[in-house]
Length: 168
Image (cartoon, rainbow, N blue to C red):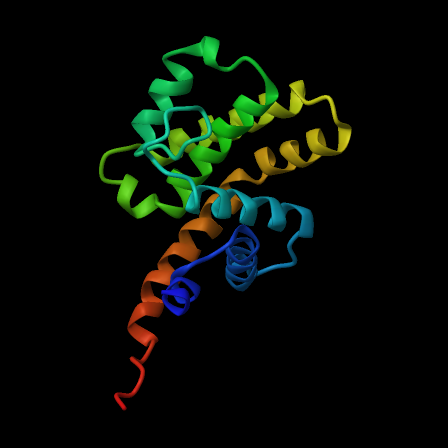
């Protein structure tokens, strides 16, 4: 079972590296390394978190869950970390899962809401460097959202380009 687990298993560092490389590949222009790492860490985090966990940091099933969790209950937005999580979830679902969400949700509206969450997180963040990063993510939210969506499409198309291993 060890070899099987090794083939299918993934740790956080390997997952992060996977998304760093992927985002770098779909970024057509020079990209701020800190923003790239942040976005890759968002994707890596949610790739490893269950949708069955019931807290602010769990992976939401769809954009309606973000609305219910953070907009319909504004008292949930009590600090910078929670607002950052709300922004990250909007980025994940409106970006990486754009094609799945587009049928039922207004992607532009959720993207604007996600950028707003990041702006409010930046305003409440005590660490100046982190606040600056969050503000950068907010101001370039649409650019990163599009990169996430492009990465998803490329990964989905990649399955058609991979050849199965030869039979022995």
